[in-house]
Length: 324
Ligand code: UFG
Image (cartoon, rainbow, N blue to C red; front, side):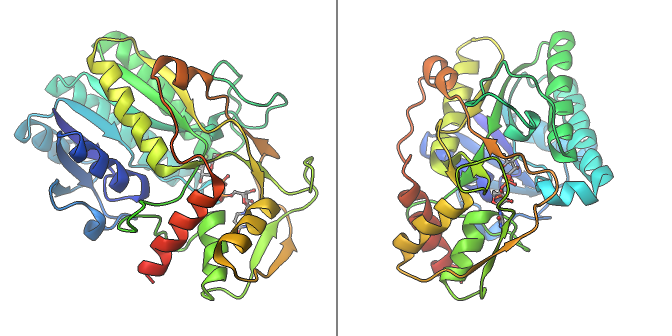
């Protein structure tokens, strides 16, 4: 199949490109390089530099490469950033998605795998969270993704689109050969920040609050290895093109680690002292986010292979060390 990977130069997208190439698909990457890195895109993929809001270029690309299916990773995705730049999040995420759906309609592309997020759930009392839980986002990032989910659901009805929505919990780790991984500037995610301390790139890290309703007071998240996450996308596309119905799945492992537990694990993996300081809470952070992953295992037959926090931390560490 000819698969268009929008945002294929980003952290998750660049792993997905490799997995789709390994599965013998033709891969076309479309990315505006606002946060992505062209040198991290596998050379066997075609690369087109373009913005998701550019209707004409997107349409031209889809026609030129006879695209059969789309995987959509291009989004602004930092919770804290979204609290300060809500309108930019609506513009890039929601308006950009509207343009993409218009192009799909006008070029007759029917299948799309769409990256959503656990941030659509907001604060929940019942853990783990299953796909039927209420969606009450507590930040603009989650709100834009929920709006995009609703948009694809309605657009699918009127345009015969078929979709899989994947709600990611906390994606982490890197390819095992260290060739692709997480490279944000500035970095905001916990695991890469902890590892920058381990590599003496930062003196210490700040723990965002220790008065949450958790065992040690720090936030608990369900960390999923990027390779397991990308494998689920591949299965989702196989599922759609085999004629199955559109659906929504969580992607996480079903258990979580607190910020302090991540620091402790990284200490052991890196064999390095990790200095931290307790700081105030970060706006918009729920106490605990843990996925129920029964549905994705049951329907897509997804079987995680890297569900060990030490593998997640070690692969991320190797990548950062190799790309210092
Ligand atoms: N944290 C710190 N110090 C830091 C960085 C993070 O204490 O320097 C804490 C955060 O406050 C949070 C936890 O570590 O409690 C994890 O934070 P991340 O920034 O790594 O990840 P988030 O949970 O904020 O967000 C990520 C993705 C979102 C997604 C969400 C779903 O970035 O896109 O997971 O759980 F919505």
